[in-house]
Length: 454
Ligand SMILES: C[S@@+](CC[C@H](N)C(=O)[O-])C[C@H]1O[C@@H](n2cnc3c(N)ncnc32)[C@H](O)[C@@H]1O
Image (tube, rainbow, N blue to C red; front, side, top):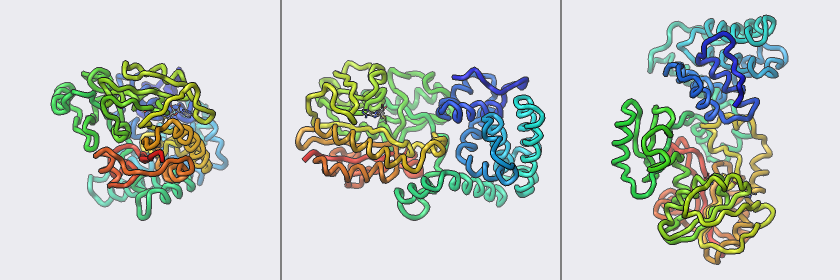
């Protein structure tokens, strides 16, 4: 967490909170969602409207960055402003406000950016920002007052924003999404899915969802609290702030995205089973697997990072294996009837929550990750009993990391087979794999496949 923020003599407001978050995303490779939560926590005095505007600015700028840069680039010679992250942040925030925030008059967006840039970078840079942003404002159709909801002006503004979001990811990524998600406008619908997902809670075994819906609604009457539509353990909470402050946190439920819950569930682990979670990380899915095999089963957790494994605390997690599967099997000798390979990936399925990924990834990354994924899954396959089942999952939706890896696993004695849980069979419509998609299921994007050791 940086001590640096860019408020100068200004009180915290939506723009400078958003600028601080954007700079952390670019300079420290921070996740936008975490950096935003941290910034909003640091400024509890920010009113709800300002917090909502900061959120819109962060996600809006990250999702439309390339389009905003193009509109600025038409009037700025060179890209020197991009080398000063704070200047870049305020330029993009202003360009976004000018183009898409009908309620902010363009002259106000320009003058607020210019005064913030002046106090941080001096008069000369502020003069440059002023000249460029005025021209950017001149390119946008003149508008009067904010258009009424549902009016033609409002739908034109929405269309402009949708176009900018759909056109902003690099061309290779848009092409890979189109090839992976099928014909029509699926790739565009994927990119346009709700960018600010709600908190998802996963109830522990034995808790009644009906009762917890009531408890949580009473605790946060102004928030929206509803049942998840796919996972029977899931409760979705919108507008309640930090979910860890709600009753039952950590004891009766944990925060876990609904799609992640589904992946652990379709492993098909039953009470008494002994399963392997081969890429357990900090144990998000391990903990749900532990619930499913309780009371007398066990989960073994492996990951290349022992410090992640050390954070998994559950009496049902029997052994922790620090293993780099690309190199070998560490000290693991036994075989399993069921394993989960929740493989590292490009994370493209999480683009709505992490729009910054689009800028960080390169065209070669999906193939590079596919090599890693294949290496991991092939080695884990040697720890499957004959007839044993592997659930392979990634939070990517790109074909190379999905079907590409699963098809290549045939050479390692793994064949596709139908899911053996009612949930998996339903999601896969009787097939051997499925994608979860934000615009279809409301979850992050994932690919999940069921494989059997021949
Ligand atoms: C998608 S994350 C797993 C998330 C975790 N299952 C959860 O639900 O929280 C992928 C994990 O694979 C681990 N990993 C990456 N490369 C690996 C390798 N070669 N061998 C073992 N683990 C690896 C990473 O450390 C990371 O924790």
